Length: 316
Image (tube, rainbow, N blue to C red):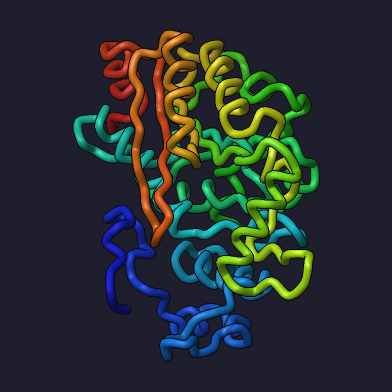
């Protein structure tokens, strides 16, 4: 492999360019989608949903030893390098409160809000750090798909639990149980405020890829309604998340969410101030030309944070 992607997290296994011969050895079916691009490099057509899914299968098998991974047609097929960055930066946040030591093992519990059909964050978090996950999801088809991924891969079977959110208006309520504790929560929220806005975003992506052949765009990345849009858009969803997080402030070491638009940060900071959080961190990430970020917050005072780390993360 060559040409390290310096912008990815130092522990991200995807810092180097894809080694397609190695990936094909891991998943021979990928060979059908690999071609030389205009620069003479091996690649896949990222506008082809089948090619993107096959690449994801190969990456998960080669890097994370996941032999069985599939998603229903039309569901979000996430770019794995960027998803891995979120996991690694969450690990850094925990390490900052743990004397620089990365907390590892099954005692570390994460909550993936809106796990989707793909189960990507629990796969990476468990295979990289040994963490256990609960994934919440409102879409019953996605619940079934994510639960199946966990069930058919022995490494994940005892490490990932999927819970269906029964209420569209709730995020943590109905998911976090009484006397249950999480070391972190994470979320890739719906970006758009309406189906029309989501479609416009899709059309822009397709035009950028130069692959639209006709009036209806093909979704290389997929995405159902609940994955792409929500009433109130990203800010509305995150505001609800912040308000609900205050109800569980002593049950989670830190809460976090991706924020797609930097213009939304001021509204999010204002919402966090209203609920009286102790600490807020904003972590910027980048992949290629895309810059993303997540905001993390905690209701625990510094002494409570130290006590949490001592009780839950220190090696006995």
